[in-house]
Image (cartoon, rainbow, N blue to C red; front, side, top):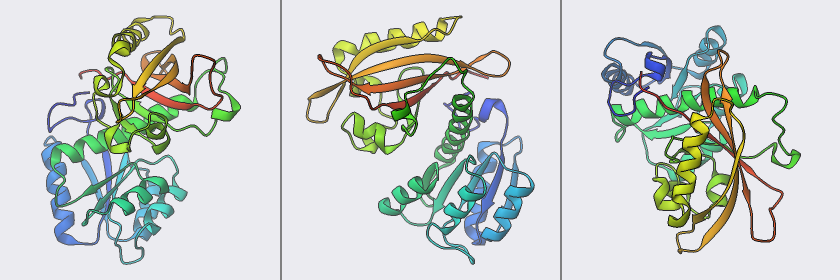
Length: 281
């Protein structure tokens, strides 16, 4: 995959998208952006009502849903809740006409992967949101299919997830990850690792990621690093890092379990992160 151009596609292929939008002008805007992202052509189904969206998802689940919140038969979060109930693992991105941080947070909590404002979204930002939403769903499935030998503490079964790139930058994170390192979510997602990790621990973090990526046996690695609070204080985090492989044996992602820790010991609670290995193609 490539992340540095407007024509990127998941694993080099255009996704199957479902647009749920009753406004003709907005539908044309989204369609134009999708055509710019994938000029070679893309499957884009379009329905105007929640009822039609549910039927489309049940008939043939798309790679990702692009959803307007104001529909003739649904408003606010009703469509998000109905679609996630219909297909809990379906990547879903809200496309709204208005910037509303409270509603955006509520939509994410209800199951949406992202919240974009139509008037400010660009083909690049929309393409990245689609790509990341699909990749998060894929890595989540890999985590669910992890080998039985990989045990997860009972107290961590409902831990939060995040997607990181090879350099440790979080591409996606649930709120609990931000709480763990003491920062607002907006100061976690997309922020380079060297801006949130203690300078003395940065080389350890990056070296461990590189070693894990190159390890043919996929053995678990453990490290303790410090993340910086906005105030300059830091929190120690113990990280257990293990490689996950796809059905064909290829390395697809890295599963990390984050534990708050201290000089005296480690807390029992934890949070998951998925570290995705991106490649050109």
